[in-house]
Image 1 (spheres, protein in one colour):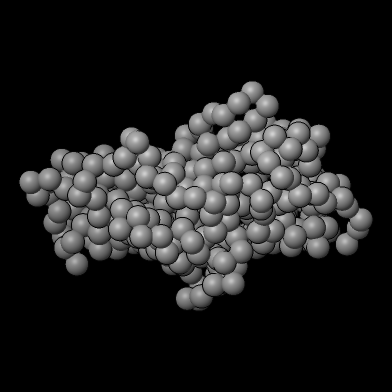
Image 2: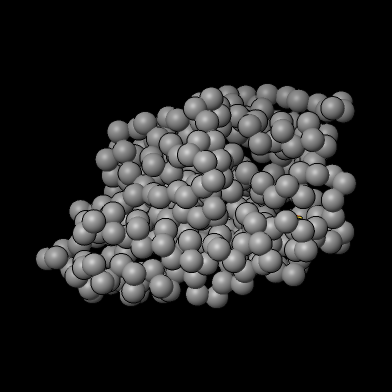
Length: 326
Ligand code: SF4
C-alpha cells in the first residue's frame, strides 16, 4: 500500500467539490480496495460517500423503479418491489459475488466495477486498459473467459457485472449528478465499448456522482428471469448469462427484452433475438430459432470459441424458462 488521503463527504455538494478536484468516490469499496492493494489503481484522494442520502428504492411517478446508488446489492435483491416487479434484477444480484460482498457492495459501485481480466490485475502484463498504449496480453494469451462481442484490437475484456445485464435488458438509465446539475444517461450509452481507448469505461465526466439507476415503467404482466452459466455454482463470474423479460397479451409476445453477459465488452443487448420473438406465440420451436441470433457478429479468440454455442444455448434455455414452455 502507499499513502493516500481519505475524507468523508457530509453532503452531495461537498462530494461533488472533492470529486471535481480529482477525488475518487468510495462506498462499499469491494472493488477499489482490491485494486489499490494490487497496485492497479493508485488514487491520491478517496472521498467516502456512504453518508449521502442515496440509499432508497422508490416507485417513480412514471411507474418505474428508482434504485439509489448506495443501496447495497443485498438490499436491492431482497426488496419487495424489486422481487415482485423485476425478478430478473433480484436473481442477477443473488447470483453475484458472495453474501458478504453483497452486504457491502452498492448498486452504483457494481456498475462501475472493473474487468476481471487477469492481465489487467497483473501489473507486470501489458494491458491497454490499465496502461494505455502498452498492448493487450490477453489477445495472444489465455483468453478463455474473454469477450466474443464488442471487442477491439486494443481490448477483449468482458464487463463482469450480472445486474448490469439485467439493467441493459430492461433499458434502464443511470442518473448522474455533476457540476452542471443532474442528467440521465441510457444504460446502453453508459458503459463504453473499448475501441481504441479501453481505459475509458463509462460515459462520465470528472467528478460525476452516480445517484441512482432507474428502471422504466414496463408493460404488465411481465415475466422475467436471469440465468448464469459459470465454471462453479458459487462466487464465480459468468461464462455466459441471459437476462430475459417477456410481456405476453392474448397469448402473443408483445414485448421482449433480452441481454447477455459474460460474452461482451459491455452487457450485450440482443435486438435480433427480441425482434424474432415479438408478435409470435410461445412454442418449442420459437426459442431455438430466436436464440440462434444471439451470437450474431461474434468474433471468438483462440480459447473461447465454445462461448458461441454456449451463448445460444443459455439464451434458448432462459427464453424457454421465462416464456413458459419448459
Ligand atoms: Fe487489458 Fe483489456 Fe487486454 Fe485484458 S483484454 S489485458 S483488460 S487490454
